[in-house]
Length: 81
Image 1 (cartoon, rainbow, N blue to C red):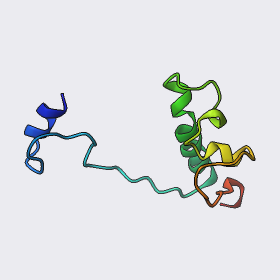
Image 2 (spheres, rainbow, N blue to C red):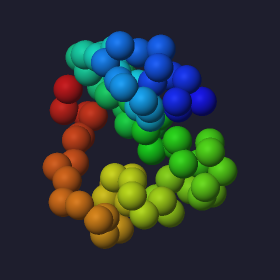
Image 3 (spheres, rainbow, N blue to C red):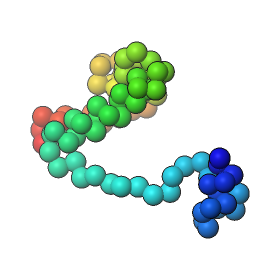
Image 4 (cartoon, one colour):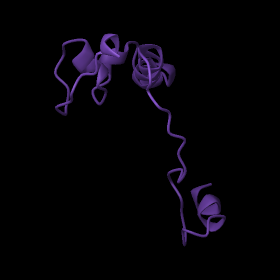
């Protein structure tokens, strides 16, 4: 599948693993920001990897639950927008 995707894309010579396009969304209010944070944090739950977002070691959800994360992040407070 990755080989077929790579051959169909003129920017690759053999394989393609990631999508090369993006669709940026402006986080202009607290509702949108909360929606996107929830979406990102719930991806491992939806994939069946963990039962709760804060259990996923690579997620910033850990920081929002007061648990240590792997990277230092700046918490976003959706209430201030």
